[in-house]
Length: 258
Image 1: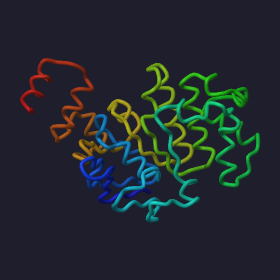
Image 2: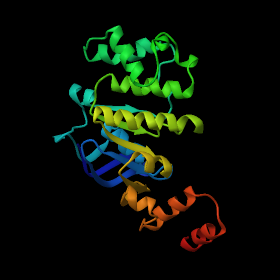
Image 3: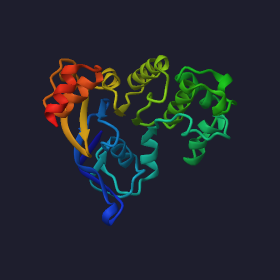
Image 4: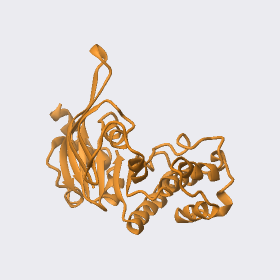
């Protein structure tokens, strides 16, 4: 469904140039959930934004469903590929009701924006019709993220790009949203690319992952390799150990690596 070859993204010019993504390549099968992990600033969200068409200054090859993508994306691409952002409050217009938020993409793409379609999209993410005329500030963080997912799904896409979709939520709500996303992928045969710094989230959601550091992919892993503690790259091992908390041995290893 998605193929990326030698993707490079550069910001700025001269001394202020930042090579944010360096020769990144990977492929995602139809119906698969693929993870991109790494520390903050590793370039994983920039890769996602390049796929979505939100970053213009990139080079390389980017294909979706066998079609090569240019910097300017078609209307069909916008329907086929949707993105769910990290901040569920910042991604929703604060002065628009949920009804308006869900109908707006339908108006833009000249699709039928019926009340029934809005109610159905709400029910798919576990909300009822009473949420239609609420504003984002009247919703909890988990409810806002469900609305963001509903807005993406209302276009009936085949690909969802998920940029840390639960990191801004309380721990008690994260599992609910992750289980929702897992169910929706199964029911709609969706393809996911999930960006996260949380290995537990990626292990729950994905079949494969790529580990990024300083803009580069340093290792490709199947989830089973991660669960069996079998990463080969030192940076991946550090990420895995850091995810399991502090230990004297871990700190001593970091010092040795430095």
